Amino acid sequence: MLEKLKQDIYLKLSKADYFKGFELPKVDFTAAPAHTGADLSLTWALAAAKQMHKRPLEIAQEAAQLISELTAIKNAIAVAPGFINVTLEDAFIIKIASDRRIKDPAHENSRQNILIEFVSANPTGPLHVASGRGASLGDSLVKIHRALGYSCDSEYYVNDAGNQAELLAVSLKARKEGKEPPENGYHGSYLVELAKRIPADLPEEQYGRWAMEELIKTQQQDMKDYHVDFTRWFRESDLHQSNAVESALKDLTKQGYTYKKEDAVWFGSTKDEEAQDDKDRVLVRKDGRPTYFMADIAYHKNKYDRGYTTLIDILGADHHGYVPRMKAAVKALGHEEKTFVPIIHQLVHLTEHGEQVKMSKRAGHFITLRELMDDVGTDACRFFFASRTPNAHMLFDMDLAKKRTNENPVFYVQYVHARIHSIFKAAAEEGFTKYDGITTELAPQERALLLKLVWFKQVLHNCVADLSPHHLTTYLVELAGLFHAFYDTCHVVDKQHPELTRSRLFICQRVAERIKKGLEFIGVSAPEQM
Image (tube, rainbow, N blue to C red; front, side, top):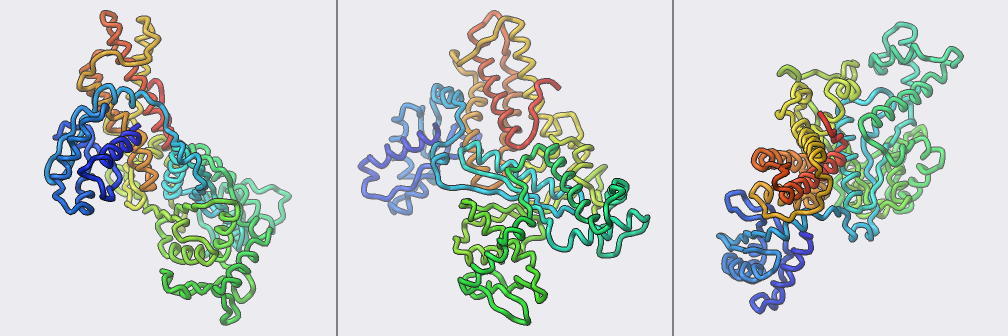
C-alpha cells in the first residue's frame, strides 16, 4: 500500500500545472526523523530541483500543498532545505498495518531467476564459524527474496574433485596409525574420531572418498540443524563426468579467450580492456588437468544453462582476487557482468570473557559451527550473524549471546513474541477469542506500533537492495522496543472495555505475526513461551 501511495502522490504532482513539462523524479519515502513528529519524509523536491532549476524549498512548498489533498494524508509540511514531512491519517495506518500481504506481483511475473550459492566449503572437514556467517547471510537472502515473490533458489557447491580425496586419505591413514598427518595434510582432530569409524573391509585407496562422503553428511546435518535448506547440493564431480568442463573450454576458445603458452591453456582475461583482472590465468595445466578456475567457469556456465539469470555468489573474506577473474569469465561466456553478483563477507572474531578466541584451521584448533551452535544456541548464531552487514568485520560476543536478558537482542525480540502469546492466553480465559480489527481511537503508543508495522515490507525490500538482512534484525529490535512501550502504557485485557480490549488484542496479533515472520526469514525460532 505504500507503493500505491507513492504512485498516487506522483500522479497528483505530475498533473499539477506547476510541474507540467518537467521530467519528474520518482517518489520515495523514508521514516521521518523522530523530532519532526511526522510519519514519512520525502526528499523528492531536492531531486526535482535539478530538473526544474528552482529552489528546493519552493518546490517542496508547492508539492506539500498538493500532497495534503490526498485522503491518506493528514498533512504535509515543507521544511528547509527542501524536505516534505508527511503525517498519515490514522485510518490509513490501520488499513495498511492490517494488510498481511508481502509478495509483490511484479516480482512473481518477472523473468528474473536468481540462484544464490553459499558456504560451498571443501568436504575435507567440519564447517567453521565463517561458514556459519555465510550460511546465515545466504539463507536469509533466499527466504526474503522468495517472500517478496522472486524466483530464487539456493545451492551448495561441493568441491569433491581434484586431489583433495587423495590428501584426505593420506591424512586419515596417518591418524588411524596414530601418527601425525603430513605437513600439507589435514590436521584437524576430527580425523582422529573419523579414523575410528573406518569400515574394517575398506581398501586404503578408498579412504579418501569414504571420508569425504562422511564429512559431506556432517556438513549437511550441520546445515539442517542451522535451519538452512538448499535447493541443491551440486557436486563438482558431476561437472567432470558430464564433460561440462570441456564444453566450457570450447566456448571460451570459440570466443577467442584462450591461448596456449608453455604447454598450458590460458584464459586471456586481460584481452578485454574493460576487464578488471590484472593478469591471465591458467585453465588447463601442462599435464592436461583443468584448474579450479576452469571448473568454476564451467560451474557458472552450468548455472546460466539451467536458466538462472542472476548469479549471487557469497564468498569468504579471502576471495577478493576471485571476483574480477570470474567477472571476466562471465563476460567471455556471453553474459552481462551485472548478472554475476559477488558478496564477500568479512571475518568473524569470537570473544569470550572479554578475550578473543583464537582460531587456526591449519593447526586444527578452529572453532566449528557445531561447537558454536551447541554453546550459544542456533537462534543466537543466526540472529547475531544477520545483524551485521557482510562487508563489516564481526566481533561475536559469546557471553552476550548466552544471556537471557534484554541485553541480548535475540532474547529481547523472542520475549515479546512469547509475552504476546501469554496475553492471548489470559484474554481467552476472560472470553476474548475474536479480535479482527481496530474500532477505537489510537493512543500514541498504539499508533507508533502500527506505523512500525507499515514499514515491514519496505524493510524487506531494503534487505534485497543491499543484499543484507541486517535491516530486518534492526527492525525487529525496534519493533520489540515499541511493543514494550505500548505494553507498559496500554492495558490490553480489560473486561470493562471489551471494544478497546479487542482492538489492542488485534494490534498484539499483528505484532506477533510480524515478529514470527521476521524471525523466520533469518532462521530464528519464535517461541510462544519462555
